[in-house]
Image 1 (cartoon, helix red, strand yellow):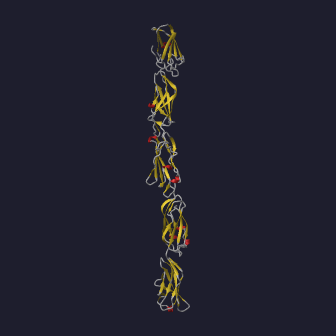
Image 2 (spheres, rainbow, N blue to C red):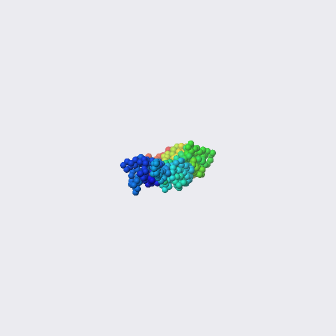
Image 3 (cartoon, rainbow, N blue to C red):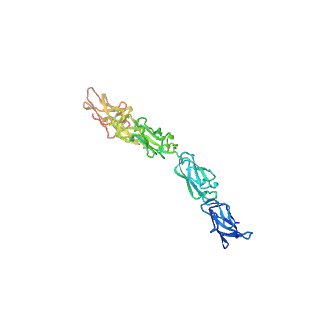
Length: 542
């Protein structure tokens, strides 16, 4: 009798098995002996081959004289998964028949089979879970397969709870959505080289499981406001642009919060129509800012965020704030006009101070409407640009007059952002401003005996110092054409008079004339003088 045995019960890829053939050679048929190597015919093999041409090498003789042991090398067939393999020796006409025990040949690497499925390929909520199911061509060594063998794009969810449903061939794994994530056509795969089947054959390469999409990111937006600053020069129109990072639905003008943007409180067109771009991402709207407004801090935000959603249903969660913008729709105006003197005589000037509500440009001297004089030397205060000053020079040789109207024309004035003004700003001075530039004018001359009194104009301010006076001979007095010498000159500053004492008394009905000649060409104390200035009184004819 013959026997056939193998040293392995399972043979996998890359392995061979030793086949031991024990036979009584006296009964062997169809055997060729070549130097200790016998080629055995009538051998049937499933699952592989034995050496080349069924060659067995001699190993040893047993106790019986005709029993011999031969061994050969069994090489399994590649890419085969067979569980009932045998080697049989069945020569005709002998009783040496033999069949090995059943052994397994598994040289096939595990592969995916069928089409993997995913319960929901569109994940739209953070922590949303869907199940992926897939089947291998054979049972796996369960210990060799973990979630580490699965591939998923970084940050695009997590794979968890890997499990088999039938002992190692059918598997499931859960995909959990990550928060604040948005991407399409994401691929989950398996690194097959990391897993083995029950026989220990490793898989090869990387295979794709399923495609999925994830959108758990809420839409966000930016808000820009133009122009900045908002002025009256463009009719106070403001454009608000809201740009989302993806298309949204449910967004209307009611979602825009204008509470800190000075929307004009009246008129049917105070807020315009909301315009939407073709891609659903950009919206624009205009509104009219309130008139006569100055505010450096203005913003636009959104409200009712839950109504604004992307295609996946995610609502806006962070409220955007626009750029800060300035609103200045207020035309420049005059706050006050001040005159620093209440009384002007010849040689005097006054300072006019005009204070505006803000810094302006375009003011000229011609804009001043102030009677009885001229305006010059206009200048802007270097520290406070709202304040302008000019010099007022009264009209020369002007008899006493007064006024209280101070006016500045506003046409052509602009503020720093271009708002223009118009009309006339009129202010009444609290008290009338008196002008009398007709000084040293003799309003009257009266004579009583030897006293001839010269009455000067009200605005004349005579120097009361009697040493600052004209000599006697500076005055020429004729009585009926005959000179009457002046023997004394007295100044009364309070009464505004100069009294001449005559050598002879004047009688009733006599004709008297008086003349004054300034004794010097310059201003000096030996003449009738103006107080404080030291200016000589002008000469006058008889």
